[in-house]
Length: 210
Image 1 (tube, rainbow, N blue to C red):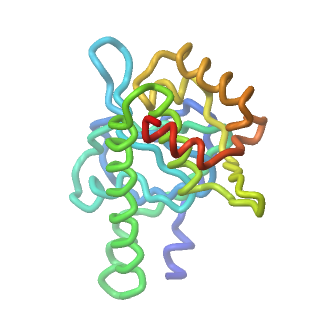
Image 2: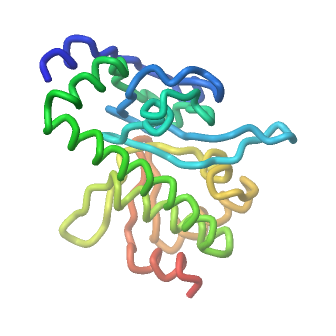
C-alpha cells in the first residue's frame, strides 16, 4: 500500500478543466480528493449529456481502467479548486493481486461508481425541473453534505446554476427561478462555499412532486 502512495500523482484543477476526453486511454485510477468531477458525452448540438457527478473519495472512470479500454466519456472538473489523485493502473492492479484490503477498496469503488451513475437516472426521472433540481441537491447532501443539529445540511461544494441546468437537463433560467423561490421560502441558501439545505423535508416533497 505504501508503494501506491509513492506513485500517486496529485492534480489540481479549475472548474471547466478537462481531466480526460472520451477515447483517451484509461491508464490510471483517479480518486476525487476535493471538489466535483462531471462525466459527460458530447451531443451533436454542441452540448453535453451528463452521465454522473462524482465527489470526494469517489473513483472516476474505474470501469474503463479495469477493462483496459478507452474512457467512454469526458471527465471535467465541475467545482473550483477540484483536486484528484491519480494512481497508475499497473501499480493498483498489482496491489489488488497481493493485498486483500486493496482488492476490497477497488470493489467498493466500483460499487460507488455504479451507484453514482444510477442516481443520475433517478434525478432525471424526478419529473418537473424543480423536482429534478431538488433531487440533485438531496443527492449532493447525502453524498457530500454535513448535517447539523437543527436539521439543515451544508454542502461544501459550489456548482453554478448553469452547471446544475446541464446536469438536470433544463434551461438555466428555469433553474435560476427555482433557486430564487427557494431562497425566499428559506428552503435552500447559496453561499460562496456551497449550499445549505435549510428545509430538507420540503426538498424531499418537491423531489417527489408534492
